[in-house]
Length: 455
Image (cartoon, rainbow, N blue to C red; front, side, top):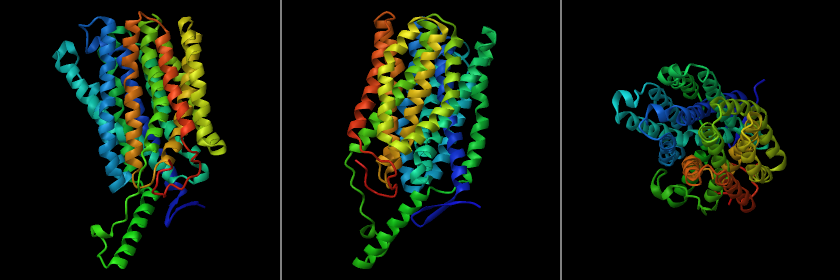
């Protein structure tokens, strides 16, 4: 017997929920595979392919700048597609974003290098990164909104965390592919090997696109539209104005703005540490610690596998003990762990280096991301949830994840390979999220059809 989910007057079956979860998982996996493939390539391959005339340290910095360019396009995409999602529905936007991301990623795999077309190569790389970022700006947020709005309130933390399994799957797939690619001879890796995962990613795109075209719209979105229609009809009946005229439209919910900044601060704690662990430190292991490039990618592979347990566990615990207490515990742990983690890496012992990355990724980053999936959705009202959530996530991502590798690479060059600025950045990102939990309300089980923000 198929169970039903009731949101206002709108019903969805458990099969609809499963289809939505799989769709969100695939799309988010695609997004994070895209960016993880690019970040690993930026750390290992792109300085030689697209920026060969630079000093190695400067080439690494420039490669990370092209990585950051994708983040600059994400807030624009978040605003554009977020507004579209709040007006015409979540489903239509998710179909468009997955197409943009997938095609852009595939085309990166076909790009000729600097040796073939000169300056046009890095320019085209930046253009594709901008297109990739524009679509990705609303992808994760849309999948998160869709799944949270489908989930029963008592299980929202657990079910919304499934979106994070997509991020974890993307990281796992990209890291696994790079582990295999690093086994290739250097010449094969640099000439054609690095291109294969970018080109092959179109397969996931096509399957996710097929899934999304068969989705039903978010029940919360439809319930909100029904509420608005009922309010408009009541207003028209009272005032004598025809339904649909501007005088009969329901009043917009007032937004205080506090929820937006809290969501952005929560995002900074997770995104900043994610970029440091999954992007900068992978390059640092090779160029700063002069260790084998396989150490970092293998650690990310193991951390991603462990994340399949820590992600749903963190979501489930947030249903039991609350979003705020879980996010506080996880961000507080990372704040304390940052300095020991960097000191473990300074040992240059492959086991300790790997352990530091694995703990940081599987516990701190993925744990915060898991709880965040329900927490930030519950902070916002129904009519503007997609727009506000997407902008908060993406602006927070630019301020932390987008700039973190660039700032860290600059500090590393400025302080001649000192470890303490790197640790200090990770402490700062964690502290921002930690403090935010004392200012944010507890939102566990909140009615997502409410039009007012929670803070």
